[in-house]
Image (cartoon, rainbow, N blue to C red):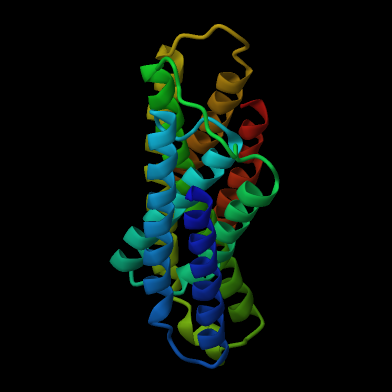
Length: 254
């Protein structure tokens, strides 16, 4: 049953992204993208609740669950940021990322078909996993905002000042403000996640924690540089995108 929740969520993400793109190409604003992403969030929550009930713990026990949890975190921050800053077009860029995460979880064999109940709980381990994945959701949305800024920057440089996409993109300043705040939010959550990782008991290799710490150091360096020296919007956007793509390497050590 839980897979049907995930399939429904994926279909809503596809529909929301496609409808939003159609609206942009026709020079109109889509009121349904946000509604579709609310439905995506609801079905994601239903999936994670069902998996959590089956596990008897936070549903972060296999890579498929982690990907769905990450997609849920990304969707949640989109709903918060998109509403706060009126970045409705952000959903058009977010929906494909959600579809990719869901698709990999569903069709790659990374999602256990019969999740086993967890016999023992590691409090700090669960805090580390949950908070870290939440952080990745915020950082993923920062990367999406960076892509939107780069698209807007390219349109301005090419003097494509008319058309549906340019007319629907939010002002560059709003994109950069939301990007910076998402980096701060993601960096703060990642700090808590790394601290919980240090406190959790370990019996095997510490390679995962080492890579997570390196990712944290990279984002701290980016935030510090932005606050002290400043970065152009283009450089900050590229760094946010590259940082998130590179940071996905941490999942290879899970």
